[in-house]
Amino acid sequence: MKLEDLAEALVTTQLRRPVIVIAILAVVTLALIPGMLNLTVKPSTEAILPTDDPAVENLDTLRSKFYGDTTYIVFEARDVRNKELLTSLQRINNRLTAHEDILSTQSPASQALQEHDSIPDETRLKQVDYGAYLSDDHSTGVMAVQADTQAQAPSIRSVHDHVEDVFESELPNTAYSLTGYNMIDLATFQVIMNDFATITVFSFAAVLTTLYLIFRTIKKMLLPLTPVMLALVWMLGIGGYLGVNLTIISMVSAAMIMGLGIDFGIHVTKHYYNTSGTQQDLITTMRELTRGLLGGALTTSVGFLSLLFATLAGMHGLGLFLFTGILSAYIGAVALLPTIIILTEPQLQGGTQ
Image 1 (tube, rainbow, N blue to C red):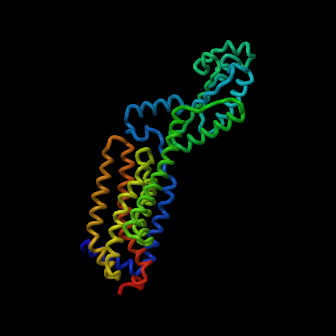
Image 2: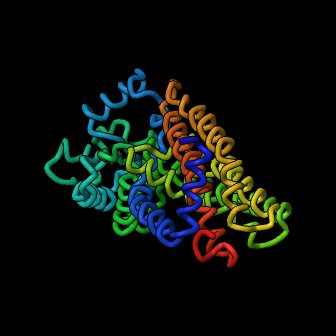
């Protein structure tokens, strides 16, 4: 059977059973939503490097032997060697280690307790060797919080919030800040999420404006968007199920699908509405476009799939997202869009004539 004959058979099915076609697509979409919601965001730069890169392997070794990632609490006082302050730090140490992801803590209080059974008076506190946990002028202290976050944004956020809550409750009047690779990863995560949303919104607005300039009606402007909306959900859902991570590289995938996937919908919409609008015109439209649409989808998606051969692991995720996104946009253009046209055009309803 020729490709054109398959296209005609699909349109005939859509004309006869449009609701069933929509229902099938809806079921698939709903099944992919959990995958989209479980998509893992990897904010660290190590997520875009090959897993066998020496730097990544050494970092993994460091984590396994020295208890994960370290967050540093840098705080200031007139003189950290203060019994009341160090007693509060001891309580902070105890409260922090109760968190499921926090493995251990080290602070000036820990150093004092290595030399004494309890926090001593201030005379003896001034004789303690605090090492790297106290500045030379005794006004700045450091608490190291070692946590097993696996560079996962939710775990890092949980540790960050817990550290802030505990420290502020015990030392509400003490100035402090959080730093370390975990905090950089968390800041990167926030940038990724903000930029992902911003880029998607702006690309959507740009595409919407362009479509209105092309079609000049709200209905025809919205129709080409339906394959892209389907593609975004399917792309992220399939990516989530395949374990693809959203990184600082793959975050641009949504905007790219908006720009590339919209072409399929534009071709179908423009071609059909340049006809007299009968059932046969819709069948003819899909017969004439089927080779071009499929050829464009295959060449573009396979081209992006070649990113799997890149050295950077982050490019692998981008390639998989774009591969599934382009094919999903094609499916939306041949399965979803004609069905929506049928349901919104009275002359097309009532089965094949």
